Length: 81
Image 1 (cartoon, helix red, strand yellow):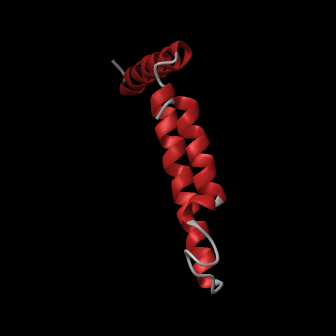
Image 2: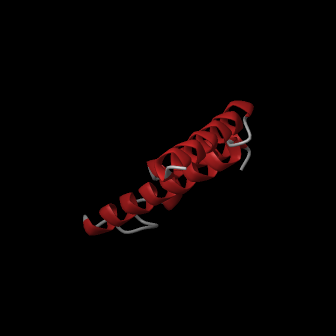
Image 3: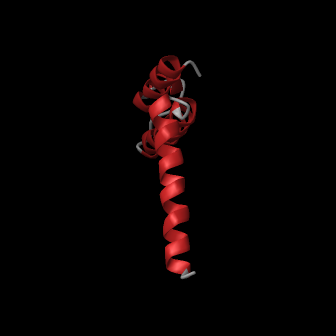
């Protein structure tokens, strides 16, 4: 059997399995965790940017008030994380 055909069949089955898991909602917790992780990384970058601008954490801004952390908290609440 040609390896290209075999790899194509395996790929098609994998895509079908992931599609079925997504459709049934089984991937919702995974998607929520990935989104929360990415938003926390965004928030950390925002904090570092504020620090390079000369702002001091605790005096000029609070870590919980950074937009990325607020979005991560919203995603956590939405997915129950």
